[in-house]
Image (cartoon, rainbow, N blue to C red; front, side):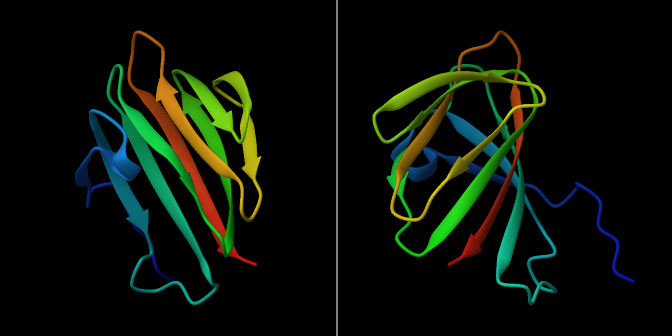
Length: 112
């Protein structure tokens, strides 16, 4: 068994050419052979993950707490705790913290 805690955090400035700071913990980065990644990400107030595209993977953004504005291609939707958004291979996407607290989310991605 391999157990990890949410302690090994990397501070990322302007993630995917966004703005502000994100605090990212990449779970099992050295032990995951499934072809996926799992990030626990915290976006500070007003911070964004910039609009970007993945040609060879799909991602699920699962909102743990806070409020965000998620854009996928030309569609924007407000998201909050308990919401999940799927971004398909080749789609452009990004998210902005629009709440008055940090936005915490899990990003789960796999190659397709």
